[in-house]
Image (cartoon, rainbow, N blue to C red; front, side):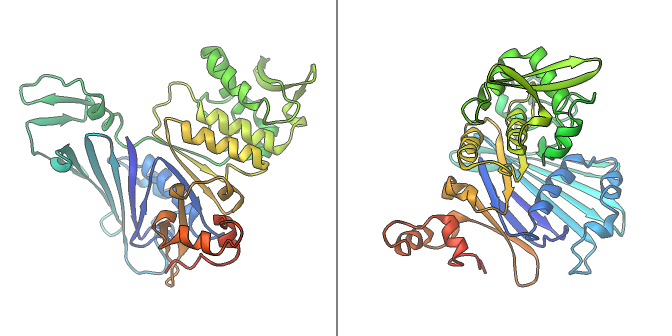
Amino acid sequence: MKLTKLYIHNYKSFYDTTIELDKMNIVVGENNSGKSNLIDVLEFVDTIKSDDFTESVINRGGFEKILNYNYSEKKIIIELEMECDSFRTRKRFTLSQEKEILVISEITYRKKENKFLPMSINATRGNFKLKKTISKHYLCHNNLLVFDSSGNMLDDKDKLSLHISDFFPISTYAFNTETIRNNSHKDSVKELLKSGINLGKNLFEIKQNNPQTFELISNSMIGIVNEIDAIDVQETFGSYLIGFHEQNKQIGIDMVSDGTINLLATITALNQDEDETLLLAFDEPERYLHLKAINYLLENFRVSEKQILITTHSTEILKYANLDEIVFIYRDSDGDTQSMRARDIPDLEGKMERLGYERPLTLDELIASNIIGNFE
């Protein structure tokens, strides 16, 4: 299942904004275009609960801090559309400051003869819950199972996958190489954190519980990082020390480059054990990487079973990106963040050929030449 559409209204820089998503999404925009706000929206929805959403709001400075300051409206709407082979689910979160409520509504459709037909409607507002079934099947969210009208459980992974959690599980990463270099040895939780601060503990858990995955991560560094033959991680008196084998010697993480640390953290995030996350979002994963490593990273993103979203303001990554993977983020004339997929830009491929003279211009060259960039 993947997230196919994200509608954001009145949240930070977004106002009446629709973002269409695919399996692979490279979100490109200038500084202050709203890329970080997009990551924040995904994190916000992933953390709010139907019974208590105030903590998520407080952590962002209060309700006023997450409103679009260009408008006096006091309501936020975030809607997500998720789809698999046979079902589509649309889930809407409506937050209101005036009544201090969160309303969650969900409509699930089933696919029949290439049409999506409504199947069930659910809504939550405070302690009030509404449920309406529009078929012979009904969904049991509490037990995360699907039953038919006779009460028999249906063993259908497509249907079950729609309700593995209360929401679409998302993981976001913005690796800080200096933090990883100085603190990754410290004891921490085993799940990889957003900054990568616990990379040592996380890698040690993978090595102990799934040696094949650890070997895959280690082998990923060979050939991409010069002179690195393998990686290892050892626990010593409660510390988790990452080591790099280099020409018959082992060096510590304090001796390798930022690019090596960033690549290791990103490859590790792509290969988490027992991870039910469906969408992985990375903030500028190409930082400190040379072009060969960037291309290698993109190939790993493409073959991953996860849906991938990455944000960047660098045009270097576009040298290896496919047109149907790129989403442009920009500010419209009102200062609001909007989006457009590259494939929806009229005659983009024609522009690339006509203006390339001896060869077609690449997308990064078109942007650098201001041939594209004003999307309104």
